[in-house]
Image (tube, rainbow, N blue to C red):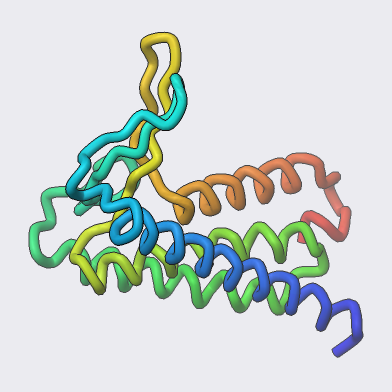
Length: 166
């Protein structure tokens, strides 16, 4: 293994652990330090609230009807995806992709920890403006979305036959 390969792997794994730590610390603070469950919703700025939501489903409330099996199903799928992403981190030739995969994996692990601890994901960031309101999300969700966006943009920029496309 070359020094460059090892560096990419370390950067990808450091991103995974950085996202995981940031996610779990933010949730710990929102639950215990800020005590958002008791407060419900707090305006932070004219366009941002902290709003307590226990998400028993997946993105945008999809698959919420799985009942008590939901956390097991979601955790299993997420951990299989994390294993595949970590494996891809060891194989990619692109540092930007290692970072994107690390962000996605770190976010997924953060949400799995919530499901195992609470049976639901802790969501609390609520952005809104001009009558529009976005779904309530968390740091893990943000990392997953940003990681997917970076991966997609990088894939669209790759030319056919380019090493980046592999």
